[in-house]
Length: 74
Ligand SMILES: [Zn+2]
Image (tube, rainbow, N blue to C red; front, side, top):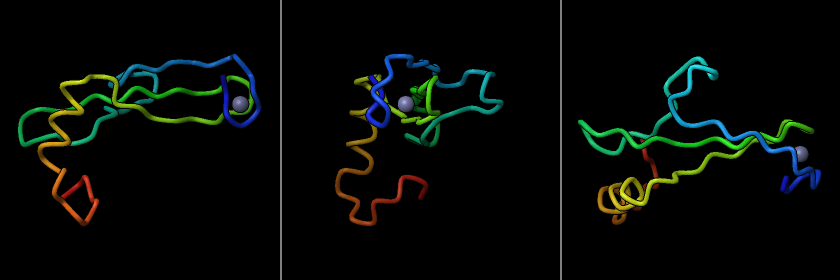
């Protein structure tokens, strides 16, 4: 359900999809990438990104949990 227009026409785009033309990820560590899934509203175009992998979330929490800068791209 779209939070903007209440449409149920939601398109789910897995991270790394060639549809977006680029690898869609947050840098989790030097060697491991955390994939981000994008949800796109087919009606109004609103999009959100989610980290769906619990291991990816854990990785990010460990790495950035104490980082007060809040910058995931350091
Ligand atoms: Zn919408």
